[in-house]
Image: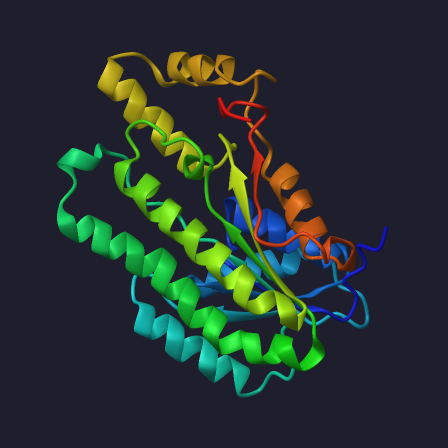
Length: 262
């Protein structure tokens, strides 16, 4: 199986912590040159220091705040002025705050769509010409299992993630003829800061401790634990590889079997 990414350039968004950081580490370990894309320059410097580096690998960073799509658009086009190749893109951004959909301010939906769908689209429009040149592209969107089954108390997130999944499926039809695949990873409960926030929110709403809430959530998963971010990163590494060339337009769950559907 060919999962060698030597010589490939990968842009990984939201890559200073959690799943995004884990994916950057995994792709680097497979030989890719990594470009981190996040807003915190100091945090990106620390991540770059953790990445595997051989004599042929070069890791870089782009700084922009994904709350502002125009800033993201400007940053990616500026970066591409001095870059000849992009083979892999991982769209990943922290989800909206927990809460019921019925209680959400309409602006919460607008802000979430801007941060996720619109920013993703700006980046894809910028890098696809580079992928077309070499007839190789892997666009991977880290979304959520809420694409399959809405998650309670994540109303804005559920809505936005579904839109991103539909956008990605549409792109997979349009870009497939150029050797570019578009797939979604749907993580379940994964041990990240985002999950800690969700646990606290649910615990507070129920009047129980975070530990009790975490145990209850683990027991809802057939494998009785949360995922490690590196487990999700391993799937991203495969989808980015030459061996995944015929996997296109898919939304793949990695949730320990928790989603109650086939």
